Image (cartoon, rainbow, N blue to C red; front, side, top):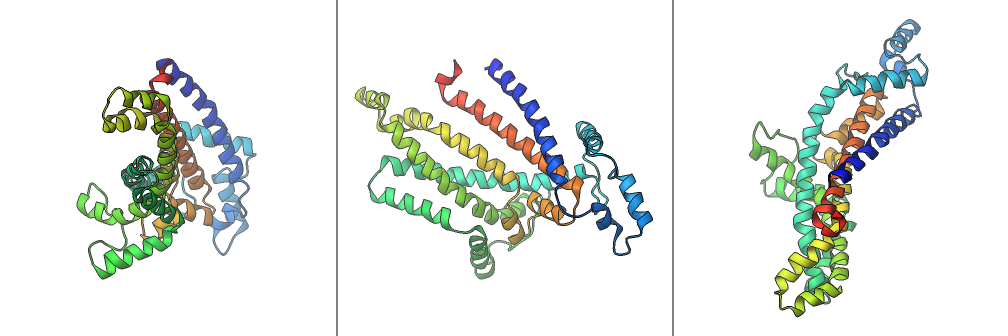
Length: 313
């Protein structure tokens, strides 16, 4: 187990280096000059030249990358060109919001998708199976923005149970925070639950037809134990992969959902940064997102070993 972890960590380091180079290089392809954006409407040539020198925009790209990666390794992601605020502080402000929203969404997805997939596989060909597949089709087909608007109309405008928009930090008031994020979390988790249901059903059907499942039933083990202890445990491997990937997608920012519910997360931050040519913010947010994505894949690999004993050797 330790050898496996060390080997995976050794693979992560060059991956992160490559990702940082890719992020910095692709950033330069964005149209427009950040110095012109910062200079304002007058665009005095002397001011533009001073801005380029201050932010090293007049240096060759390898030199700019060297300064940037040196700062990143020391925890300095640079300063926002637009609001004159350290990118690290911006990330620390927005990351807890996105983490809360993504965590709630993935929990909702797992609580709905995995049980629905199990029931659909065990009750194959029955009304339960058709109902679960209908739910999956609905979840995949329903646009997030439409579902979000409908939830606001029903639960905020008609019933008045939940706030229509806004965000309250957990540390400030956890009840108000959950009330403000439950609808956007459900909107995000709904589509993921549908995907998880389809994958869980497919994996369970494959496992339930295995020889060791028939052997377990022949030994007189209860059907509940056969499904939960033997079948589900081995069927979880592809579901774990999917869950890690979907959580990484959520952490990268659900732009439409955050806009509809006015959630100040990573999605809104990265969109504003791209439109304002705020290079430092774009680079910092994308690098943090990519790092989290890679670490989630590492956690998924470790979960494989814990779930499937055959992989421990």
